[in-house]
Length: 298
Image (cartoon, rainbow, N blue to C red; front, side, top):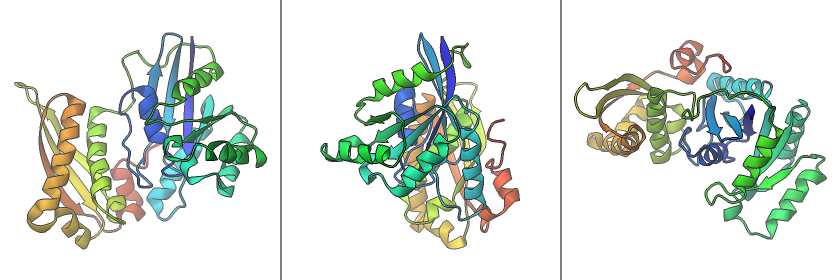
């Protein structure tokens, strides 16, 4: 039996969470086409008869603009130093850039085994794949590269096998039916935040925190009562989130509720509120209160 932890590292929007969800076979992390979708360290657990891979999904590498982003980057850096293997994910569709090579060299220098996943090959010309992959070796990074498409499940199984072969021998960390270390309550809040990221434009979704204030299953009937606070940074953001006569909030709540019901396999009675906490992403106390300043390895 082989078992170990794998830090999934890469720039924002490289496809880390999508790849983990596909490999685990369950949705353990939200996804959107926008940077900063992942804010927390999330474990995704893949268990086979011969091995168990514990993926550590980390916030995308992003230039710090506020205290929250700084906390996110510290989470990524800490996670990379306490694992058995690093899986560096690069957005193949965007091409290999100098800063990508620099980041790969940085994590390679930690002395931890590392593989590279070259993602999104389904949306780039086939003839460009070997040319872009060659840039990694030409840049001085001597690591195995796996061109993959998570959405089309291309080469994902080969990547999984190689990851497993590099893990140490040992006992499983989690029971076979566990796919994540996060609670259902946590995922409910994340599902709402995912829909906000998808529905709203520009800076508004990045300035939103979702706090689950009530998560309760009724004693009779397969139904959950869920209350959420959507916290934004400015009064005009609140107006946009709610929309004219509450239309925007109703739409995003309905969108989120459908996914919540699929996730919980139950009916959901959802109530949402929008509150303003001015510039909360730059206030350490509020960041901690909203659960973004915990020890990433606790």
